[in-house]
Amino acid sequence: MLPRRNRIVEPADFRSVVRRGEKYITEHLIGYRVPAGEARVGIVVTVKAGNAIARNTARRRIRAIARKLIDEGQLDGDIIFRFRGDAGATGFVELESELNECATKWAS
Image 1: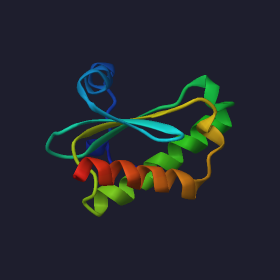
Image 2: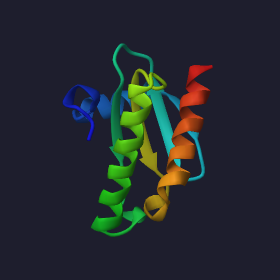
Image 3: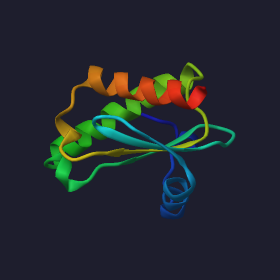
Image 4: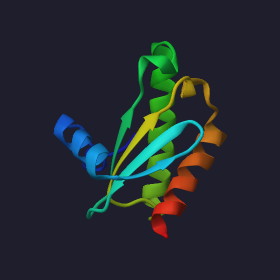
């Protein structure tokens, strides 16, 4: 679970990051990032990703991976991860690989 200080929860913050953020697209995710002080993460999972169980599983996986990356200092700024299509069935290892790819791209 991400601590409250590391979560984006306000709809205006979501819109701002998506509109102004640097975009990076992977097979299952679209990541948006706006440089800022402390890392904050928001997750968007559409109904296309599957039923409620699949969507919640996807959110939990992203939160766990994001927390690890934040603790390691690899993520910073305001970040939104949006699932593409039926990505709800994506495995943990594949999601971790895609988030690491995003973090590496944004670090350079």
